[in-house]
Image (cartoon, rainbow, N blue to C red; front, top):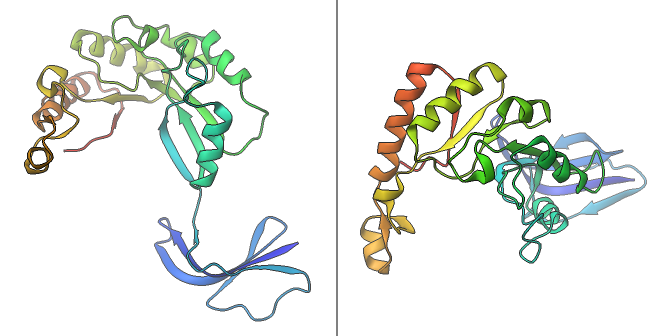
Length: 237
């Protein structure tokens, strides 16, 4: 069965594409892209919805899963359905489940909950940097690396810079990315948005920009000294 998507918006950052066109798909592959396709196969289903966007699948690097531990909030099935609805074809789950993915057993347990292999969206896992993602004690990073995690993250800011330094040193030879979030919680306080005119107008507690930039500066000093590649999460300054 062939499908024709008529006058949809095509987006592809790699090829710098952003245009309106007809797209013909058959046997699961794109057969033709033209401003207007006239010659159609005998059996074709026409989807005439000009508001649709056709683009490469989106990737969520920092997904939180309610399962295991918080199934009343969300299950893996509902998470995956929401991802597909939003156009996401790959999710990377943070380790802050309950129990946390802070050991090979935890990662294997999480993998066993997935419906089947080859599913869409594709699911990958971050291994926890610290036990129970509490930011206090380093996990067995080498063991986690062999369990199939794509990298290491806690998903929340670490406040102990001696621990951060050790983590960078231990992660260096493992060949896995490390993702860190930068925020000095003492400066951030109870802020729920960036401190500024908008926070004052809304009457809500604001977090000053320096709560991020101070922690970011300290992390960059550690990186320069040790040399471990780091992905900095959710930069806002």
